[in-house]
Length: 446
Image 1 (cartoon, helix red, strand yellow):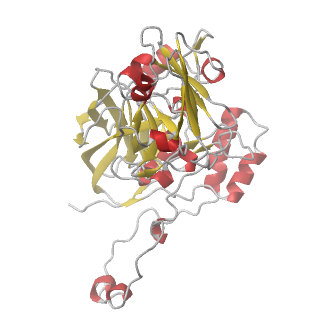
Image 2: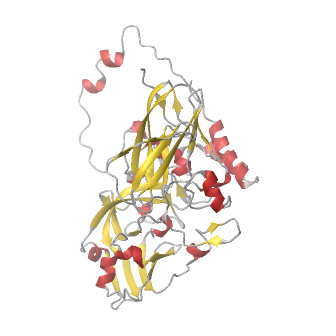
Image 3: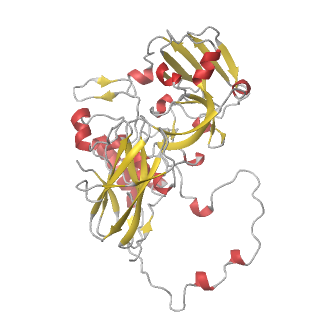
């Protein structure tokens, strides 16, 4: 059996000309604008031939028969300073969506999920969401305050926080609006744009409950905590004390073995596993203990779900069980028939992923995929399954189940409850259409 070959998605999906063409379409409706944005960007791409000719040179492969330069000479000296990826990987990068509101300061960047391996997102590719731009704050001047229903209100310096007992844990962070454009039947082209407001890192810091106990928190009256950020938006979010008492909520200064990056909240951010990313307050400067939810602006009029009856559903923070196939996925091309390793990511804000099933016929038949270890709570889980493509059209889907028994819904099931006017918390099954010519495209299956 000949092994199939895959051409990865074109990472340089958007260029300046494409973005300019997007802006010119802004007078149209929102849905047409988003569709047109990606169409305009795609129009400028020159796609190479879909199927490469697998013809070996008559005298053998010169890359094997002849010694290359790197096999005959001295290499580069030790790379002093901060290491960088290979120049051949320069196109693997975060990208801004043309379908979002264009401002002088980009507010969202998407992680290239289709180009990543394992479960950890490199810090330099971690998705970003900013409400007032990012800052590189002097840690020697940053302060963290605890007040409210505590006996000893206190202000901590970074040095004082970093002297406390620390923990390191792997967790995913997902924006509540991830996959949001798909609510409106907008088929954005690649996994980077459908699901790229998602990343996973090892975070290091101090459990928030440890800090609150040092300050004499009143766990009887104190049922909620208000977390406040130090950027211009003064992001404030209510965190239930039940989550904090579990020890999972962390005041973090470390990410993937180093200090947080400025765009990820340096020098201090909140980590709230399983909860939408807006609650992971960056540039954290204060927490206040109270006896009821704080009804902050970003949890009463923003990050709310518009239901079919016209009411807003508030405080819907948990990121429900979800998955996505990243290879093969939109924008990629299968160059040959044959064997492929179908792989992707699954996660749940309620705990561990228990099972992932994969279908290649649009959900008529399912097979159970392999879960690659380690499988950790509220963390990305890598799954894989073997597939032999026969060259005919196929629709690839994944469906995750978590340890609480929650099963990832289809669009039909989700819309029956949530309607079509939401932006947030879309965890419906993603479908990728493999056409006969090998091109993979985003489609929606009910």
